[in-house]
Image (cartoon, rainbow, N blue to C red; front, side):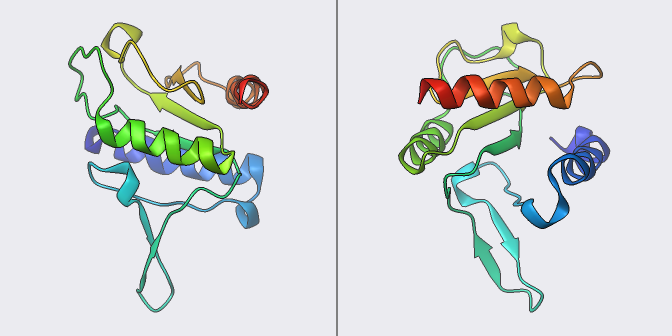
Length: 133
């Protein structure tokens, strides 16, 4: 996702503006979403764990813009962890749909992340996913 670094930072700020900075926690990972971390003020790693709140991840799901039929196992594990905690998993993917995995766990929903993506689209995805879980 390095080519999208500036966009990721803007997305983070937009989410904080919409949802509220006090309710938004940002975790980062490199390759394995189940290893997402944040750091405390004293630079101690703080691992991420689902806690029932919606999880929004901007990701290419490890595809790097290549077509794939199945999601990587770490994304399946993340989706299962979120489902157990009651956390809807919203995945913003910058690649066109034909690059996306054909199957994902039912609590995960993919949204194309582009210039036309709106907070309303994400809100609607959270509502529809929560209704399915």
